[in-house]
Length: 151
Length: 339
Image (cartoon, rainbow over all chains, first blue to last red; front, side):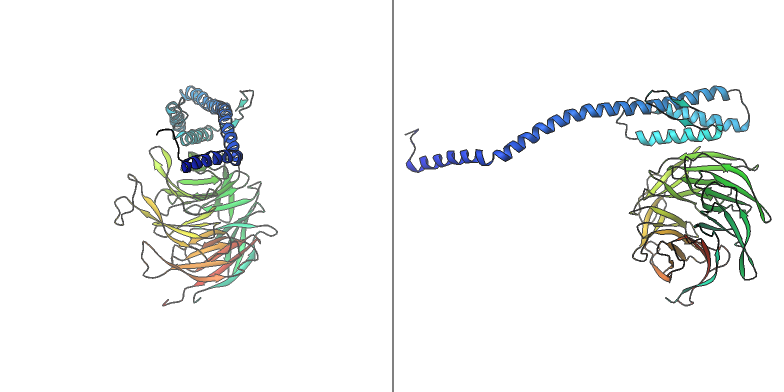
């Protein structure tokens, strides 16, 4: 007949219920640990995203500021050298144009660009070479106020 | 050890200071030394003795770390911790500073002339390597600023015949550069050392490069061209470099310098354990997997760290060394015949 348990089965299922009860007590420590970890992880993740975003914004702005400065510098010198025709000046002009080309090809909108740091280093190298050729000392300070740039 | 290293003479080159580096002029008649006393001294022989023929002071505000002669022998370049590189022109026994190259942000660690004499390379703690071009009027122009290393760059050296530049760094790597179009680019990175790479030396043919490191090993690297018979993979038309030999277990401290004799092929090392060692390639060893044997080991060559070893370019077996103890020593290395 359905629903009726034999004596052996009754005892087994009663033991199973008992074991579950003890389990609940014995495993409580581990369970709370697990729940605590999960809560902490979720909270940490969301705090991390906020902090990461703040850092990224700041860092991105710094890079943008640096590159913007190089661009302004290069465009200004392009105008200044425009009228010069000496042989030395043609090398300077070549380097100015190479720097402008590097800056134009830089993907400003893509922070996941795989060669971001490599390209930035190339741009910085080109800028330093240009300063050397123009005999200009770069005295570059990017301050919190935003525009402490002097040459 | 059948071969031996015998002391010929010792001079107190930079008293109360360190002697950092030595460079023989192309004819092997003069030796330039530089040190922590901010001076450069030029040494020559008078009979059996080495005497100081010139002192170049007033060139730098801080330690002079390296010196290098131009291939023609008329110019000497000096790299200093004051962030500048001076170019000195030789006029008999006098030297005049004709140009000062600026641009590095901090200590210049090394300077080297290309075999053509038209190019100069410098490197610095600012992690960059600069390539300069010099024209007939002794005007220097920066041709490239290379930011490939991620740490302090310790040494630069040119290939003996090609316009190929090598650099060694605190970032544990060796990098190679060549001209591509209008610019210089890093064409290879040699990884393997487990600590700072202090110095580099090409073998006489330029097919192999030796590097020495703070990890107490010397590594030998070989260039493989695209389409090579050994089946070493190359990307595109760039050659590939592979480590074909590692000399380990011989040095008990950092190895600061390695020098490959262009006349005999012997390899000398300068070590922080105050010793000088010489290695020779075993005759008949496989060119793709060469073996080298230690043929001379001079304990206490100096009373402190040996900073540099330099083989004379014309006199086989003549080796100069210098140390933190401020002294320069001259040695004769004898290869036993029939080894």
